Length: 250
Ligand SMILES: [Zn+2]
Image 1: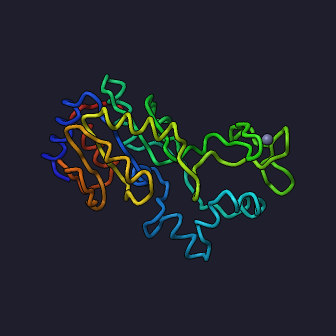
Image 2: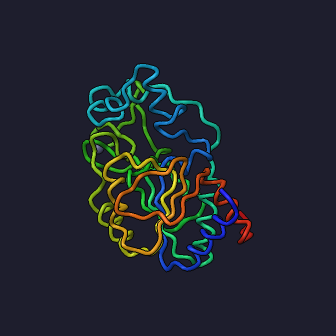
């Protein structure tokens, strides 16, 4: 990352009418949330422990093995807070820029930073629902049985996180809204995603606008789209550098 790239990013944002920020796991790693597939990633570690993420992070597994699912060891995690990327995007929005966040993450950090336009493509861990009747519960309201399995008040169904797991589809209304938003944006910022998961890796091709920025550890080959600016740097660090030109109080 160099200064001329940051100046370029600023110019693009200032000239855009609608910016879509299309983010993946790499947006939250600087907040202390591991990504999935890198060396320290959640799935890499599960596989190292002989657990198949595709089998475990799966509706059928929760139904058939709720005790195992809700008692599986969770990695130790410090306090998770929004980083400079979440905060800077929210500050830009608050200052009147139309910045629309479409995220593959389920951590709610954009909202926590105060962002008002956020679409969570893969659902959210902030709301849970009953697998039988779809009643919605907040994490702090969960009632667990003696085996630590969260249960529905009404039908005793298993209550699970509202996250899109393996083998499940993105909510159709989220797909539609994502497409419409990308189609009417004139700046698309793709950040911290390896674009390996369907349909997240296809939706970017809805873009018809003017400029594409990629902020990522590696430059991804995206056919059909010309990347105008590629910044090889951590996403939070990039937005911290951008803030040197705005001086928001993050
Ligand atoms: Zn229920």
